[in-house]
View 1 (tube, one colour):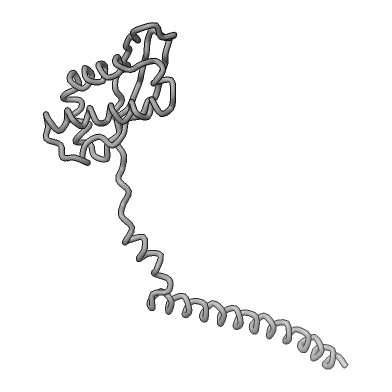
View 2 (cartoon, rainbow, N blue to C red):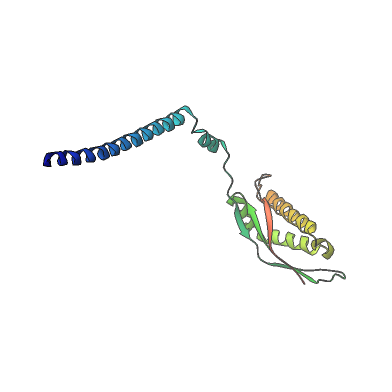
Length: 168
């Protein structure tokens, strides 16, 4: 009888070991099939489409900034504010125009100060007036760069940003 008990114990252990092997075999087959499908898609081109689109997309230019010194001008006439104090930064997609701005800063500051002092209080208090002023500053800087450094159109300053705009 002792022998039959031992046989029963062996019979109980075998199926559990067989179930583990079967489970491992199924998982291995699933991984193998998944890997072969993924590899096939990558080779055929189904998985590489996103990579191909990323290569075709043009690289976004890196912006470079240059902070200009604070500018203070007087308002004329009977405006409620007497002074305008402006801090601004110039943005270009290349470093070359910013280096040229630094080299010709006296001319550029002069032109911006003349432009700022010619503004009326009623105009620069509106968003549209500030946007027009920004566009005029960009045009003025690019004009100086074109005259003095022969910077091609579109290669100069792309934007000017007011970082502080105080009227008192």
